[in-house]
Image (cartoon, rainbow, N blue to C red; front, side, top):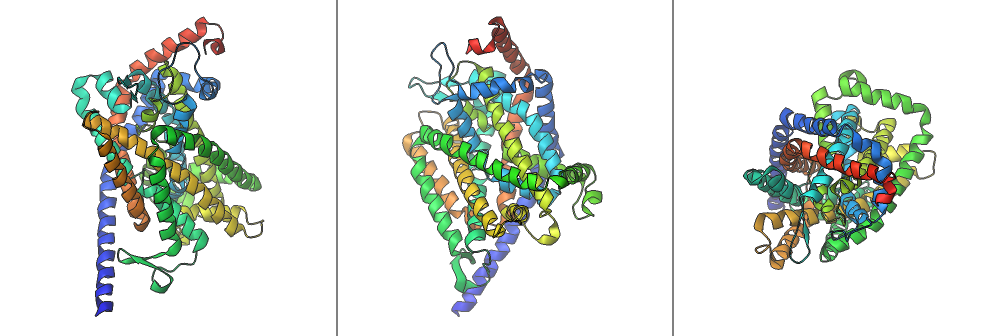
Length: 504
């Protein structure tokens, strides 16, 4: 009798998983339809056109501002410009750069990487605009706490009548943090990589080798890793923004450089095939069937997956990064815009390196039946095939990289969600008890993240990312003239002092 009940429970659970996956896929298709894809591209083109590409001509200045404290008058803000950037990067360089790229190529073909890069290039303009507007329209309360982000520049920049759009952004931002990019995708990426390292041959149908939860069987490593990340998240979140910024400024630069060196090592080892990989990416972007032998669908699917994952990976246009940028110690909006833009610049490089590694190894092909982190792991294993135990090294490296990247992303998105919640409720109602209750809910969702399927995890992330991005993109388009005027005034100040370095 017990066995019959257990079997019925498993069957019911599997049925609900299939239904949930179908619902999520259907909603994802609606959200990431042609209107949102066009809005992403139009916003990037409009902002870039208004700026006359000036932001791209000042990368050297952006690097300088990234590491130097602003001189002159006492600057407003809670953390340094570099701390704000690392907080934003902690929420950007995560599973999107490793698993997200693999998922995009796996479902949209190599051409998805091309559209990721197009959207990311335009995203440098939108990210610059977001950082600039965040500082320009931020508020400082009587306790000296800085509050800023899309909800403020929508309401203050466009006027009170646009407040419903600001509220819409804050609501979807909170949901995206809880059920999308902030929790489920990150913890799922970590535990998947841990399982591949410790239990690569795990069979979910063999109850004797795993732990039964929610009607399914999971490896011991998945359950243990999920518990460890959940506890670590709970411990760090108690410290707030400054704790997050401190953790991020240490972990993010170190892991980003390490990951880039490993990717570069693999790419240089396959230098003779780089031209072939680039040709495959471009051909697949405009003719997927010809480039992939008909294994992947239409151009629209490549665009859809590429642009969706670009927003996930770079967060350009999503509206999350300006929440962190608003806390930077600076009095110049354009200065922080340049620093903010560097987050997208670094993420583009990491995503391109990951994508090239996957295309060179051809681990994206459907016949291999790989998905998520496994596509990247196999790509690294192939790229390191000349080394002994290459598969072991690849699994270890991806596990460690995802562990650090995804963990800092979880921390950064909790901060974003709390700012959204504070805007929705108001400072008086958003008491410490409310914040702690939200953090508890956030931690609970982190805890259940490992037990959802890959398709549901990424489908939910896409849905909430799209809903969150839409109001922000509308605001960026409408506020583009303000961005240009502020930029022009800032550059004029720099030129008046003959050498821009003297201004700082």
